[in-house]
Image (cartoon, rainbow, N blue to C red; front, side, top):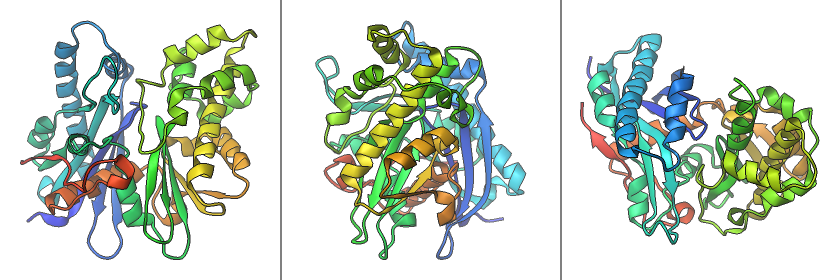
Length: 375
Protein backbone atom coordinates (compact mmCIF):
# COMPACT_ATOMS: atom_id res chain seq x y z
CA UNK A 1 0.00 0.00 0.00
CA UNK A 2 1.36 3.47 -0.83
CA UNK A 3 1.92 5.93 1.96
CA UNK A 4 -1.11 8.07 2.74
CA UNK A 5 0.12 11.69 2.90
CA UNK A 6 -2.49 12.41 5.56
CA UNK A 7 -1.51 9.76 8.16
CA UNK A 8 1.05 10.72 10.79
CA UNK A 9 2.15 9.41 14.17
CA UNK A 10 3.01 11.79 17.01
CA UNK A 11 5.28 10.64 19.86
CA UNK A 12 5.52 12.62 23.07
CA UNK A 13 7.16 12.22 26.47
CA UNK A 14 6.95 15.21 28.77
CA UNK A 15 8.79 16.56 31.78
CA UNK A 16 7.06 14.06 34.05
CA UNK A 17 8.80 11.22 32.15
CA UNK A 18 6.08 8.73 33.00
CA UNK A 19 5.28 7.33 29.55
CA UNK A 20 5.61 7.70 25.80
CA UNK A 21 2.31 8.83 24.29
CA UNK A 22 1.70 7.76 20.70
CA UNK A 23 -1.14 9.07 18.53
CA UNK A 24 -2.11 8.10 14.98
CA UNK A 25 -3.74 11.04 13.22
CA UNK A 26 -5.45 11.52 9.87
CA UNK A 27 -5.12 15.12 8.69
CA UNK A 28 -7.20 14.72 5.52
CA UNK A 29 -10.45 16.63 5.29
CA UNK A 30 -11.49 19.68 7.25
CA UNK A 31 -11.00 18.17 10.71
CA UNK A 32 -8.29 15.88 12.03
CA UNK A 33 -9.26 12.35 13.02
CA UNK A 34 -7.57 10.62 15.94
CA UNK A 35 -7.43 7.04 14.68
CA UNK A 36 -5.71 5.44 17.66
CA UNK A 37 -3.60 6.03 20.74
CA UNK A 38 -1.14 4.05 22.81
CA UNK A 39 0.79 4.87 25.99
CA UNK A 40 4.00 2.98 26.78
CA UNK A 41 4.90 3.50 30.46
CA UNK A 42 8.52 3.91 31.48
CA UNK A 43 9.72 1.45 34.09
CA UNK A 44 11.24 2.83 37.28
CA UNK A 45 14.81 2.18 36.12
CA UNK A 46 14.33 4.19 32.92
CA UNK A 47 12.74 7.08 34.82
CA UNK A 48 15.73 7.09 37.16
CA UNK A 49 18.17 7.14 34.23
CA UNK A 50 16.28 10.05 32.65
CA UNK A 51 16.08 12.09 35.85
CA UNK A 52 19.80 11.56 36.50
CA UNK A 53 20.48 13.30 33.19
CA UNK A 54 18.45 16.38 34.14
CA UNK A 55 21.21 17.61 36.44
CA UNK A 56 25.02 17.68 36.21
CA UNK A 57 26.75 14.51 37.37
CA UNK A 58 29.60 12.14 36.50
CA UNK A 59 30.10 10.48 33.11
CA UNK A 60 27.17 12.32 31.56
CA UNK A 61 28.10 11.92 27.91
CA UNK A 62 28.42 8.12 28.05
CA UNK A 63 25.18 7.83 30.01
CA UNK A 64 23.35 10.23 27.72
CA UNK A 65 24.48 8.30 24.64
CA UNK A 66 23.22 5.03 26.09
CA UNK A 67 19.88 6.46 27.24
CA UNK A 68 19.45 8.21 23.88
CA UNK A 69 19.65 4.86 22.08
CA UNK A 70 17.49 3.07 24.65
CA UNK A 71 14.80 5.74 24.37
CA UNK A 72 14.96 5.60 20.58
CA UNK A 73 14.13 1.89 20.82
CA UNK A 74 11.26 2.58 23.23
CA UNK A 75 9.82 5.36 21.06
CA UNK A 76 9.95 2.98 18.08
CA UNK A 77 8.29 0.27 20.19
CA UNK A 78 5.44 2.66 21.06
CA UNK A 79 4.92 3.51 17.39
CA UNK A 80 4.99 -0.15 16.34
CA UNK A 81 2.53 -1.12 19.08
CA UNK A 82 0.22 1.65 17.87
CA UNK A 83 0.40 0.32 14.31
CA UNK A 84 -0.43 -3.20 15.52
CA UNK A 85 -3.31 -1.91 17.60
CA UNK A 86 -4.85 0.05 14.73
CA UNK A 87 -4.24 -2.51 12.00
CA UNK A 88 -1.96 -0.22 10.00
CA UNK A 89 1.47 -0.95 8.56
CA UNK A 90 4.51 1.29 8.29
CA UNK A 91 3.81 1.79 4.59
CA UNK A 92 0.54 3.55 5.48
CA UNK A 93 2.26 6.28 7.50
CA UNK A 94 3.76 9.37 5.91
CA UNK A 95 5.95 10.29 8.90
CA UNK A 96 6.46 10.20 12.64
CA UNK A 97 6.85 13.41 14.63
CA UNK A 98 8.88 12.65 17.75
CA UNK A 99 9.35 15.24 20.46
CA UNK A 100 11.85 13.08 22.32
CA UNK A 101 12.61 13.33 26.02
CA UNK A 102 13.85 16.66 27.34
CA UNK A 103 16.84 16.29 29.66
CA UNK A 104 17.93 19.95 29.76
CA UNK A 105 16.12 23.16 28.86
CA UNK A 106 18.21 26.29 29.35
CA UNK A 107 16.44 29.06 27.42
CA UNK A 108 18.25 31.92 29.20
CA UNK A 109 21.96 32.70 29.18
CA UNK A 110 23.48 32.91 32.67
CA UNK A 111 26.88 33.59 34.18
CA UNK A 112 27.72 29.89 33.83
CA UNK A 113 25.77 29.10 30.63
CA UNK A 114 26.63 31.59 27.91
CA UNK A 115 24.60 29.98 25.11
CA UNK A 116 20.95 29.03 25.69
CA UNK A 117 20.08 25.50 24.59
CA UNK A 118 17.47 22.77 24.79
CA UNK A 119 18.31 19.08 24.58
CA UNK A 120 15.91 16.25 23.76
CA UNK A 121 17.03 12.64 23.42
CA UNK A 122 15.42 9.51 21.95
CA UNK A 123 17.48 8.84 18.83
CA UNK A 124 15.37 9.54 15.71
CA UNK A 125 17.77 7.47 13.56
CA UNK A 126 16.83 4.46 15.70
CA UNK A 127 13.12 5.29 15.45
CA UNK A 128 13.28 5.50 11.64
CA UNK A 129 15.31 2.29 11.43
CA UNK A 130 13.09 0.20 13.71
CA UNK A 131 9.76 1.46 12.36
CA UNK A 132 10.58 1.87 8.68
CA UNK A 133 8.91 5.29 8.85
CA UNK A 134 10.48 8.67 8.08
CA UNK A 135 10.90 10.48 11.39
CA UNK A 136 10.93 14.21 12.11
CA UNK A 137 12.54 15.23 15.41
CA UNK A 138 14.60 17.88 17.23
CA UNK A 139 11.93 20.56 16.85
CA UNK A 140 13.11 23.07 19.44
CA UNK A 141 16.66 23.96 18.44
CA UNK A 142 15.90 25.74 15.16
CA UNK A 143 13.67 28.17 17.04
CA UNK A 144 16.49 28.74 19.55
CA UNK A 145 18.96 29.30 16.71
CA UNK A 146 16.77 32.25 15.71
CA UNK A 147 16.83 33.72 19.21
CA UNK A 148 13.71 31.99 20.51
CA UNK A 149 13.05 30.08 23.70
CA UNK A 150 12.38 26.85 21.81
CA UNK A 151 9.20 26.58 23.87
CA UNK A 152 6.32 26.41 24.13
CA UNK A 153 5.79 25.12 20.59
CA UNK A 154 2.25 23.78 20.90
CA UNK A 155 0.51 27.22 20.73
CA UNK A 156 0.83 27.13 16.91
CA UNK A 157 -1.12 23.86 16.92
CA UNK A 158 -3.59 25.24 19.46
CA UNK A 159 -4.20 28.17 17.12
CA UNK A 160 -4.72 25.86 14.14
CA UNK A 161 -7.12 23.54 15.93
CA UNK A 162 -8.84 25.48 18.70
CA UNK A 163 -9.07 29.17 17.72
CA UNK A 164 -12.50 30.71 17.15
CA UNK A 165 -13.71 33.96 15.61
CA UNK A 166 -16.76 33.84 17.87
CA UNK A 167 -15.15 33.65 21.33
CA UNK A 168 -11.85 34.08 23.14
CA UNK A 169 -10.33 30.80 24.26
CA UNK A 170 -7.47 29.77 26.48
CA UNK A 171 -5.75 26.38 26.22
CA UNK A 172 -4.15 25.34 29.50
CA UNK A 173 -1.76 22.41 29.27
CA UNK A 174 -0.81 20.95 32.66
CA UNK A 175 2.03 18.51 32.18
CA UNK A 176 5.20 18.41 34.23
CA UNK A 177 5.31 22.13 33.51
CA UNK A 178 2.20 24.14 32.72
CA UNK A 179 1.72 26.43 29.76
CA UNK A 180 -1.04 28.65 28.55
CA UNK A 181 -2.14 29.68 25.05
CA UNK A 182 -4.51 32.64 24.76
CA UNK A 183 -6.51 32.73 21.51
CA UNK A 184 -8.55 35.95 21.16
CA UNK A 185 -11.07 36.25 18.33
CA UNK A 186 -8.74 38.45 16.23
CA UNK A 187 -6.38 35.54 15.47
CA UNK A 188 -3.45 36.72 17.58
CA UNK A 189 -1.74 34.37 20.04
CA UNK A 190 -0.13 34.75 23.46
CA UNK A 191 1.62 31.73 24.94
CA UNK A 192 4.17 30.91 27.64
CA UNK A 193 5.05 28.50 30.43
CA UNK A 194 3.36 29.51 33.68
CA UNK A 195 5.72 27.44 35.85
CA UNK A 196 5.40 24.02 37.49
CA UNK A 197 2.46 21.83 36.61
CA UNK A 198 2.65 18.33 38.07
CA UNK A 199 6.42 18.12 38.39
CA UNK A 200 6.82 19.16 42.04
CA UNK A 201 3.76 17.28 43.30
CA UNK A 202 4.98 14.14 41.51
CA UNK A 203 8.52 14.49 42.86
CA UNK A 204 7.35 15.09 46.44
CA UNK A 205 4.97 12.11 46.63
CA UNK A 206 7.50 9.86 44.89
CA UNK A 207 10.13 10.75 47.49
CA UNK A 208 7.91 9.14 50.15
CA UNK A 209 7.35 5.78 48.45
CA UNK A 210 6.43 4.10 45.22
CA UNK A 211 3.66 6.42 43.99
CA UNK A 212 4.58 8.21 40.76
CA UNK A 213 1.82 10.79 41.20
CA UNK A 214 -0.96 11.91 43.55
CA UNK A 215 -4.09 10.09 42.33
CA UNK A 216 -6.89 12.66 41.89
CA UNK A 217 -4.89 14.99 44.18
CA UNK A 218 -6.19 13.05 47.19
CA UNK A 219 -3.00 13.45 49.24
CA UNK A 220 -2.88 17.19 48.57
CA UNK A 221 -6.56 17.49 49.49
CA UNK A 222 -5.85 15.83 52.85
CA UNK A 223 -3.31 18.49 53.82
CA UNK A 224 -3.35 22.17 54.74
CA UNK A 225 -1.68 24.88 52.67
CA UNK A 226 1.18 26.52 54.56
CA UNK A 227 1.18 30.20 53.61
CA UNK A 228 4.78 30.81 54.67
CA UNK A 229 6.03 28.02 52.41
CA UNK A 230 3.71 29.09 49.60
CA UNK A 231 5.04 32.64 49.64
CA UNK A 232 8.64 31.36 49.64
CA UNK A 233 7.89 29.28 46.56
CA UNK A 234 6.01 32.08 44.81
CA UNK A 235 8.99 34.40 45.32
CA UNK A 236 10.89 32.50 42.60
CA UNK A 237 12.07 35.04 40.03
CA UNK A 238 10.55 33.07 37.13
CA UNK A 239 7.04 34.13 38.09
CA UNK A 240 7.99 37.79 37.60
CA UNK A 241 9.59 37.34 34.18
CA UNK A 242 7.69 38.77 31.21
CA UNK A 243 6.80 36.57 28.24
CA UNK A 244 8.21 35.09 26.08
CA UNK A 245 9.40 32.65 28.70
CA UNK A 246 9.74 28.90 29.26
CA UNK A 247 11.08 26.75 32.05
CA UNK A 248 11.80 23.21 33.24
CA UNK A 249 13.26 21.00 35.96
CA UNK A 250 16.38 23.14 35.99
CA UNK A 251 14.40 25.76 37.94
CA UNK A 252 11.64 23.74 39.60
CA UNK A 253 12.91 20.54 41.23
CA UNK A 254 12.76 18.59 44.49
CA UNK A 255 15.96 20.13 45.84
CA UNK A 256 14.43 23.60 45.53
CA UNK A 257 11.35 22.42 47.44
CA UNK A 258 13.42 20.76 50.18
CA UNK A 259 15.43 23.95 50.71
CA UNK A 260 12.24 26.01 51.06
CA UNK A 261 10.75 23.46 53.48
CA UNK A 262 13.90 23.55 55.63
CA UNK A 263 13.72 27.35 55.78
CA UNK A 264 10.09 27.35 56.92
CA UNK A 265 9.70 28.15 60.62
CA UNK A 266 6.77 25.79 61.25
CA UNK A 267 7.30 21.99 61.16
CA UNK A 268 5.40 20.65 58.16
CA UNK A 269 3.61 17.34 57.68
CA UNK A 270 4.31 15.77 54.26
CA UNK A 271 0.68 16.12 53.16
CA UNK A 272 0.79 19.84 54.03
CA UNK A 273 3.78 20.27 51.71
CA UNK A 274 1.84 18.43 48.99
CA UNK A 275 -1.16 20.70 49.53
CA UNK A 276 1.13 23.73 49.26
CA UNK A 277 2.74 22.45 46.05
CA UNK A 278 -0.71 21.95 44.52
CA UNK A 279 -1.59 25.49 45.58
CA UNK A 280 1.63 26.79 44.01
CA UNK A 281 0.61 25.28 40.68
CA UNK A 282 -2.98 26.55 40.98
CA UNK A 283 -1.97 30.10 42.01
CA UNK A 284 0.79 30.48 39.40
CA UNK A 285 -1.57 29.25 36.67
CA UNK A 286 -4.50 31.43 37.76
CA UNK A 287 -2.30 34.53 38.14
CA UNK A 288 -0.90 33.98 34.65
CA UNK A 289 -4.35 33.55 33.16
CA UNK A 290 -5.68 36.69 34.81
CA UNK A 291 -2.73 38.67 33.43
CA UNK A 292 -2.86 37.34 29.88
CA UNK A 293 -6.42 36.17 29.12
CA UNK A 294 -9.49 38.39 28.98
CA UNK A 295 -12.09 37.89 31.70
CA UNK A 296 -14.86 35.57 30.67
CA UNK A 297 -12.87 33.59 28.13
CA UNK A 298 -13.31 29.83 28.12
CA UNK A 299 -10.39 27.84 29.52
CA UNK A 300 -9.86 24.37 28.08
CA UNK A 301 -7.50 22.10 30.02
CA UNK A 302 -5.32 19.30 28.64
CA UNK A 303 -2.38 17.25 29.88
CA UNK A 304 -2.07 14.89 32.83
CA UNK A 305 -3.08 17.58 35.32
CA UNK A 306 -6.65 17.43 34.03
CA UNK A 307 -7.05 14.22 36.08
CA UNK A 308 -6.02 15.90 39.36
CA UNK A 309 -9.47 16.72 40.74
CA UNK A 310 -8.12 18.73 43.66
CA UNK A 311 -5.91 20.86 41.41
CA UNK A 312 -8.72 21.52 38.92
CA UNK A 313 -11.04 22.44 41.77
CA UNK A 314 -8.55 25.00 43.08
CA UNK A 315 -7.89 26.48 39.64
CA UNK A 316 -11.64 26.81 39.06
CA UNK A 317 -12.11 28.48 42.46
CA UNK A 318 -9.28 30.92 41.74
CA UNK A 319 -10.81 31.83 38.35
CA UNK A 320 -14.44 32.71 39.15
CA UNK A 321 -14.78 34.87 36.02
CA UNK A 322 -13.67 32.09 33.65
CA UNK A 323 -15.23 28.78 32.66
CA UNK A 324 -12.84 25.84 33.07
CA UNK A 325 -13.46 22.75 30.91
CA UNK A 326 -11.58 19.86 29.30
CA UNK A 327 -10.43 19.94 25.67
CA UNK A 328 -12.73 16.94 25.26
CA UNK A 329 -15.46 19.58 24.78
CA UNK A 330 -13.51 20.58 21.64
CA UNK A 331 -13.43 16.94 20.48
CA UNK A 332 -9.82 16.15 21.40
CA UNK A 333 -9.11 14.08 24.50
CA UNK A 334 -6.86 16.00 26.94
CA UNK A 335 -4.36 13.13 27.24
CA UNK A 336 -3.43 13.24 23.55
CA UNK A 337 -3.24 16.93 22.61
CA UNK A 338 0.56 17.11 22.72
CA UNK A 339 1.19 13.86 20.84
CA UNK A 340 -1.23 15.01 18.13
CA UNK A 341 0.55 18.38 18.06
CA UNK A 342 3.88 16.76 17.18
CA UNK A 343 2.24 14.67 14.46
CA UNK A 344 0.96 17.98 13.07
CA UNK A 345 4.42 19.55 13.31
CA UNK A 346 5.93 16.64 11.37
CA UNK A 347 3.36 17.26 8.64
CA UNK A 348 4.21 20.97 8.62
CA UNK A 349 7.92 20.21 8.34
CA UNK A 350 7.47 17.90 5.35
CA UNK A 351 5.21 20.51 3.75
CA UNK A 352 8.02 23.05 4.33
CA UNK A 353 5.74 25.20 6.48
CA UNK A 354 6.71 26.90 9.76
CA UNK A 355 5.32 25.65 13.06
CA UNK A 356 6.71 28.09 15.60
CA UNK A 357 5.11 31.40 16.58
CA UNK A 358 7.64 34.22 17.08
CA UNK A 359 5.11 36.08 19.26
CA UNK A 360 5.24 33.11 21.65
CA UNK A 361 8.86 31.93 21.57
CA UNK A 362 10.59 35.22 20.78
CA UNK A 363 12.27 33.83 17.65
CA UNK A 364 13.22 36.30 14.92
CA UNK A 365 10.94 34.70 12.33
CA UNK A 366 8.57 31.82 11.58
CA UNK A 367 10.62 28.70 10.87
CA UNK A 368 10.36 25.17 9.54
CA UNK A 369 11.26 23.10 12.58
CA UNK A 370 12.94 19.73 13.04
CA UNK A 371 15.36 17.45 11.27
CA UNK A 372 14.13 14.76 8.87
CA UNK A 373 15.44 11.20 9.21
CA UNK A 374 14.31 9.24 6.17
CA UNK A 375 13.28 5.60 6.48
